[in-house]
Length: 315
Image 1 (cartoon, rainbow, N blue to C red):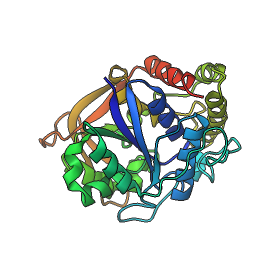
Image 2 (image 1 turned 90 degrees about the vertical axis):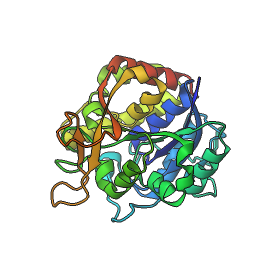
Image 3 (image 1 turned 90 degrees about the horizontal axis):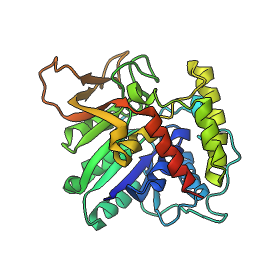
């Protein structure tokens, strides 16, 4: 049984692999892609999502641009990891040309998500791999569609330390108000944070196996990973860059690859040092009702085998 999904993203090197995993796994039916300002500006993330699908030969999946920035803050971006255009490394092809052109849908992200949810024969899962602004806007403007959302799986947050500040992970830090709104909506929610994604490391062995696939997708991906691993080494001292976003896709594509726990999850909205920090009460210390699932473990070998299989099945 396949799970219908929408991927909401801000590509970003790891978002590209998340899109490929969603498109290449038979367990998932990728219905739509929406973009948000995050790693880089909306102009770049929208183009990069289309490039990712075009390179992989994925056509017929609409791509729509969404929120250019957070609900209540100025957008902060991450060129220091992803480069000025968000996909530093390879020469980027024109997504409107080539053998598999992918053009931007005229609808907004909110309109595309709403139309997709309404047209689907069953509730649809949303996999969000950037700031969760678009999902928050949808739930704020179209609360009637909440029952049409099977669940939201979000890459962001952490049970431990952050990567944008000492306490906050980047996606949560960029738009904590959006995360708070989604958590309060009552929609089933799973957080896939740095505590797990930092185990999905792009080691030399992983890169060799992916490159050996030899198709167009794998070649482009290898160029992306070369740049991504280099910047992670320069910024964080991690030569084997962690490929965060595909882990959120794996939660639905292969649930046995990621272990989750039911717990209380909140996000800090104020504080000179703690804005965007995710409070994950795994031990029930606060006595609050559980409101989310949080990833706490990953079968790394199984995860990478799934990524390899997906890439191998693309163009």
